[in-house]
Amino acid sequence: MASIMQFDFNLSGAGVIAEGPMKKGAWFLSARRSYLDVIIKEILKEVSSIPIFGDFQSKLAYDLSPKHKITLLEIFGFDGIDILKDDANANYYGDNRTRQNTAGANWQFLWGNKGFSNTSISHTLTKFDLNWLQTRSDSVYFDNDSREQEWRLQNVNYYRLHPAHKLEFGVEAKFLETRYDNFFAEYDDLLGNRPPAFRFDKNISAMKLASFASYNWKPLPRLTLTPGVRVDYFDYNTNTLVSPRFSFSYQLTPLTSINDATGVFYQNLPMILLAQNPANKKLRDPSAQHYVLGIHHLITENTRLTIEAYEKRYDHLPLDPAQPSLFIIDQSVYQEYFLNHERLVDNGKASARGVEVTLQKKLAKDLYGMAGASYSAISFIETAGGSALSFQQFKFDRLSRRVECLRAEKHLSLSLE
Image (cartoon, rainbow, N blue to C red; front, side, top):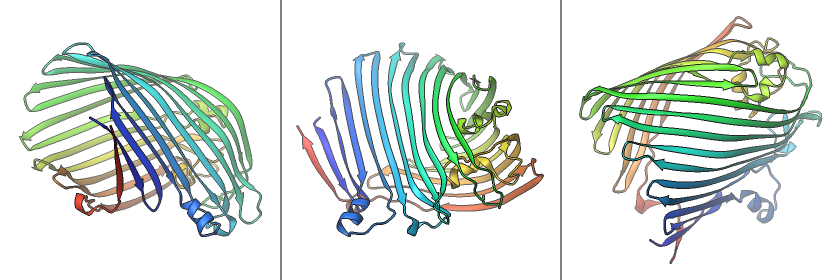
């Protein structure tokens, strides 16, 4: 098999993909970069707030022997935007730069015909460089020159005790190292509150340990039961969390199955919130209880219909008594980062329930796609202020299609012998 290189050009950017075989493995390279900023500034001679973004990926898979395989992976990405004051549609403008990189290696070891294990080690780095100014006064609104790193070691094992009994188990260790250098000016939040100015300059190191196991059992030819548990320990707040879960699947007919899953899941609070106040170490970790019931039906050999109903209940969500109606977890979504909170409590609650319908068409001949519709009802109960908020949402995702003879993007391909 020959090596292949493909160049992509479209309105947003350019990229190249190359891949090829080796004597005992294969390699892959990919790089992309946007160029709208170059077009507008250099060709059109205009200055505007244009985002820039790009990424690089590489992967190498090598077979050391029939039982041992090594995979190396590297992913790098960057994005940024310079929002000019004349283009600002909010109360601030400025520069935003983010860089992320993940590199790692995985070793796959086949024990024999009954089991195998994957052992991986990786390093992730995220660098933030943000400088926002207030539109009205040109004074600093938010400055963030921070770095987050994570070293991770994970071992996952799969073992088939019997055709009806399968076991998955493993361990995980993470070492976190963060360097925060943030300044938050006084600002008016969405609800009219005015938090005070706050500077946060701190180095933090922490360790996370985890172990997990699940047992796949087929007591009947059509019935599959999967109990499991996960145990986590976070040394920054010395919290130990036990997360049980359970699922089953029953094959009603050769084309239709009914599936159910339930479990308790925990999420550590972001370090940027935990470290702002030593008292935050005593906060309980947010938890969620999931209940999911669904039906899968194969309409044709390559078309599947899925209908799922779910309910999720959230507890111990962080709240700021000074901003009792603010849902802090969503702050990173609509503002892209967490702001300053001098004091937090952990008695926030929320719930979500709904139905999702998905129609998936796998690639057959020249057409594939997916269509989905969902209905959800979400409630937030913020006991710090005794308030509650609820809303309903209906969403429809249109079908995406691909016909090989009507492709919108043109590709230039080059084969390297």
